[in-house]
Structure formats: C-alpha cells, structure tokens
Image 1 (cartoon, rainbow over the protein chains, first blue to last red):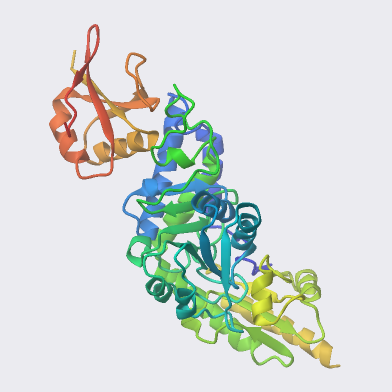
Image 2 (image 1 turned 180 degrees about the vertical axis):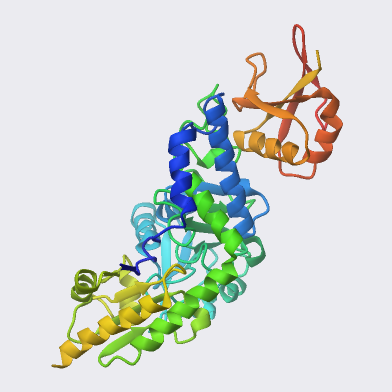
Length: 381
Length: 86
C-alpha cells in the first residue's frame, strides 16, 4: 500500500500518536478544566503540554495565544467571521482553498464585506507587489495560502508581509504546519490557521489558530468554559474565550505526540527527507510521454505535492486505477480549490495529486513512476 | 500543621502552567478544587507551602502566568495575603 494523499490527511502516523490517543481514552478520560478530580487534572496537563509544544514548534512565546479548534477550516471561519465587519475590505488570492473562499463569499453576500481576489500566474505563483497594490483605505485583512494544496507552491510570505505594510496578515497553514520551519512571531504573521491531522501528524478532529496579542476577534462559539461559571458572560481570559465546550482530549493527546515527534526529529530533517522523495517522483514523472506537471520548477519553493494530468485519462479514472490495480492512494479532481484550478488551466477536470510524507520511501516513488508509465503506454497503443 | 497557601489563577491554563513551573523548580504543589470559600473564575487552584512563597514568586515572575490571589489556610478558613505584583 502506497499512501500519497498526505495533503488531505497524513497516514500512517508515528506509533506514539495512536498510543497517546488510546492511552487518553483508556487511562485519562477526564475533561480538562471541568472537574476537580485527578483525571480532569491529567487531561488539563495534556492539553497544556500540547499547547506548549505547538508554541515551541511555531515560535510563539505565549502558548495561550494558540487556540484549539476542530480543524483548519474552523480556525479560518473563526478568524474571518470574528475579525471582519460590514464594509471591511479583504484581499485574498486565486490559489486559496474553499475553506477561505467560502467563508469570504458568505461574508461578502451576507455582511457587505468587499473581497479582492489577486490572480496568480499559470504556475500558481503570487506577485507580492500586486497584493500590496490592492490595499485600500478600508483594507482590514490580507489572507494568503502558505502553500497550495493543488500545486504545492509555497507563497512568498515574507515578501507579501513587506508589501502589505501594517495590514493584519492571516496565513492559512493547512499545508505547511509541521512540514517547513515556521516562526510566527519572527515572520510577523498576525493570525495562523492550521490542522492537527496533516503534517503535524495528529488525528483528525483537532486543529488550531494562533492570534497575536492585540488583535480582537469575536469567538465563533460561546458556551461553557469551566471558568467564570458564576455568570453568563463569556470569560475573556485566554484561551478560554475561544474554547467553549469540551475539548477533543484524545485528539489533543495524539496531536501532542505528533508534535513531540516532530520536535525530536527536527523540521529541517522532515523537510529534507520529503524533498528527496519529491525530487525522485518529479524526475520520474517528467519523462513520461503525455504527462503534464503543474506548479513551480524550483524545488525550494515547493511542498512535497505534485499535480499532473496524463493525456487520454481523466484524473478520477487514473486515481481509481492506481488504487485498485497498484494500491497507490492519491486524490483527483478539484481538491476543494476550484479557483486554483482555474488559475493553472485545469478547471473543470482537475488534476491527479500525489502528496508525500517523510514516511514514504524512494522505492514507493519508483513504483508510482512504473504505474504511471504503464498507463502512458496504454494511452499510446 | 505545616502552613499551606492556595494560589488562585485566571484559568486552568495558568494553573497548569504554574504547576509545571513549580515542579521544574522542585517546589511542591498540588492541584486542588478551588475552596468554596474563595471566589475564582477557575475551578482549580494550586496548594503550596507557605514557606516556599518567595521561591514561587521568583519562579512565576517574568512568565506569562496570571496569578490573581494568594490565601493562607488557617484553622477557621482562609486569609488573603498580598499577591506578588501588588
């Protein structure tokens, strides 16, 4: 079995991750911050330790500024709906995922938020100057995909930060958190959304949002926090202000194990291994007749994600055959990013996407190339 | 009886942060339900030794931990003490 759908969710996880989830469900089980017994206290420690680990991994000095959510989509909805008001102008791009574009579309239609979408070039590359030039007097936020889930291209975040001046900057880290070095305070990123279940190696059902000090965002959910219980007002202390309801304890335990694994392995080593795999697969695919590759050619600006099409085959048909005939798991079609596909010229059919993790192997990349060569030969005969 | 104090914090995050900080400084502490006689936003508190208060102050100051109140446990209840930043 060759799993190459890590851009959707990572698999397998390091052994410590399911172990941590099972340990929480078997031996801990309490709800952090809710009761006074030892199991609730142990749950609180796990929640705290994972938050501290995330802060260490992402260069955040106060871990209470990292909030737990269910996933990156919820994080982005919290940030966008909680920050933007009627009449605000927001700048985003044509390479965003629907987890950004759909809430912005909703805010545009329901709340008179003005949205400017800056087009990428046909490779999915963004021009920072074009983004800066779109700033108006009422621009309240710039929202950028740190890396495309279709092409794998890494956005020029530092150049965009410079180009937009003091306008608050929300970065969608769905594809990058846990995969490339990120130092949020140093990079001047004001808001950062991330999932726990992709490169951070945690289970599905947990994500996070970093909000820098000084930014006011209205919570998405109001309710019980285990604090300020004498009253009905939402407590304003962090992180409780944004974390109503029972936290996903087992998910956070698993996420903590994943982040711990990354801290021990080192993000630079993870990156190095993933790009070796990327280069191997890329070099093999680019020699296949009838195969078109999308994205940037500069490997230093790429995540370990490759989108392609093979003439004579739909991406969906190829993905199905790869799964059934070769046990190679990929994702076809539009990847919840229709605008990205319009930008790179692959709409409406989409692309076949291979997305690696450092747990894949060189021999697996070679097997993928063999399979794709076989499909190419079928097309030519 | 060895005098104990109860430390009141703004949230369970601060309680847990303080517990970790004190433990890393080899200072005894116990996470306990906030006594009913004391009002707090957070349902949990930290019990510490009164004699360790100065070292606790040194350990906690300079961190992001928000310590709100310190109460000395006495036979007939709790007496508030001056908090570190007051």
